[in-house]
Length: 566
Image 1 (cartoon, one colour):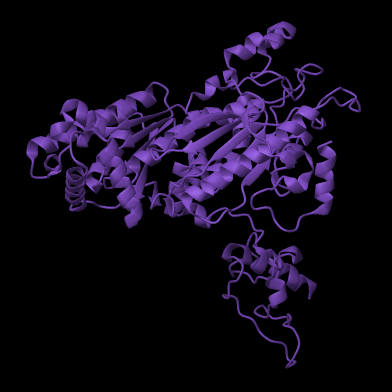
Image 2 (tube, rainbow, N blue to C red):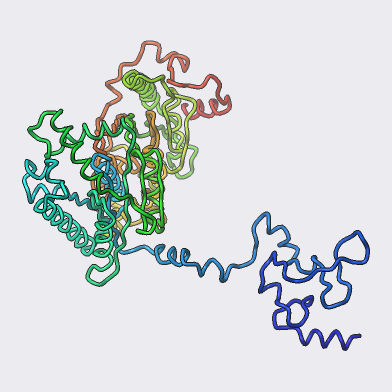
C-alpha cells in the first residue's frame, strides 16, 4: 500500500536512488557498470527487464544514469571526476611538477660525440628567442680552464682509475653546476648543463644540489639525454668534434679519432641511461629520429617538446624576404594599405624573386645529389605578400602568423602596414606619440601598442612557424613584413630578442639562412637587383618556371592571385 511505500522511502539511505532497497549501496557510490545489485528477468521469456515489485527486482533501465549519459561508454562519461585517479601517486606527481618553477636546470646526458652540445646550443637559442633568460654551462670548458687541454683532453684523463683526473673532472662539474644555480638565483630562467652526466650517482647529486639550493626548492631539473647509434651520424659527430675541440689541437686526424674512440669506450664502460625513476627527462635519438619524454609538464615543456621534435642536422636554405612594394588603395576608407596590390616595382621584384628561387633551389638539389622537391613557401595573408610569390609557384601556404605586428591605434594614416624604410619609423612615432613612446622605449619587447600587440605577442604566434621551418628538410621561402622578419632574423642570428626592434631589414633583398653543423646559422643578403632576369621573363607566367610546381592547380585560386598581382 501507499503507507508501505512511504516507509520504504524513509528507510532509504541518503543519496540512494528510489530503486535502491534500504541498506543497499547506492549506484552513485558504486559507479557506472557495477554488477553488484541482483537483477531478475520478468515472467515473460522475452522483452526488457522490468521491476516486479519485490525489493530485489530492479530493472537495468532503472540503474542507468540520465538519458543524456547513456552513450557514455562510447563517447566518454559525463560524470565529474572527484576522487579515483586524482588520488593516485602518479597524478599527485603530475600536480607537483605542473606548476612552473622559478628556474630550471636542463642537464644533458650522453656519451661523447652524441650531439649534446648541438642540442644545448639549439635549446639555448630557442629559449632566448622565447624571452627566457638562458645560459649554457659547458663542463668541458671548466675542465680545460683548470687543466690544460693537452693533458685533460687525452683519453687517459678519463680513466676511472686515474684518481687525480677523476678529482679534477669532479671539481669542474661541481663548479659548473654551482655557477648555473647562481645564474638562476640572479634571475635566469633556464641553465643548460652541458656534460656527460653518465651515471645515476652523478645525476642524483645534481638533483640533490638543485632541489636543496639554499634550502629554497625553487628550481627544477630535467635531463636531456642524447642517444645515437646511427654509424653515419656518429662518424659525422666525431669528425666535427676532433676538428673543432681544443682537446685535439696539434693532433693528426687519425690520432685524434683513435683517442676520441678510446675516451668513448671508457665512458661506455660505466654509462647508465636515464631511468623513469630519476624524474623528468627527454631523450632524443640519433639527433631527431625519435623523441621520448617522461614527466614533462609546464610551459617550458609545452614549447620544448615540439621544438626538439622538429630539430635535425640536415642542411637546407631558408629564404626570408619582405612582401613586395604595394600601390595605394583608394577604395579603403582609412587609406590603409592592407589591401594594396603590387606596384610595377613590386611586380619586377616578384619576377626577380622567382628567378632567384629557381636558380638557388636548382643549385641546392644538385649539391645534395637528390631529385628536386618543391620549395616550401609560406606567406602572410596580405595581398601583396601573396602576389609576390605568384611567379614562383601557384601552390603555397598563407598564415596570419606572418602578418605585421598589430599597432592598434598607433600609425593610422602614416604607418599602416607597409614601411618604406629598413627599420620601423620610430622617430616619427616619438614625434606623434611622445607619451606612449617614452613608456614603450622602457620595454620594447613587451610593451603593447594601444589596442594591439607587443613584439613578444608576435613571438608567441611565430613559434609554430619557426618550429615548422626547423622541421622542414627542403628549401623554405617565407614572405612576411618588417616587424615579423626582425624577430625571425634575431633568432637565426642568435642575437638578444630585446634588440630585435632595431634590426635593419632591407626591401627587395633575400635573406638567406643556412644551418651550420654546430647548431647555428650562416646569414647572407642577396639584393634582387643583382638577379639577372631571362629575356622572356616579361612575357607571362608560362616563362617563369617554378621548381616542383604541380601539374594541376586551383584555377579559381590562380584568378585571385592574378587579381592581387594587379
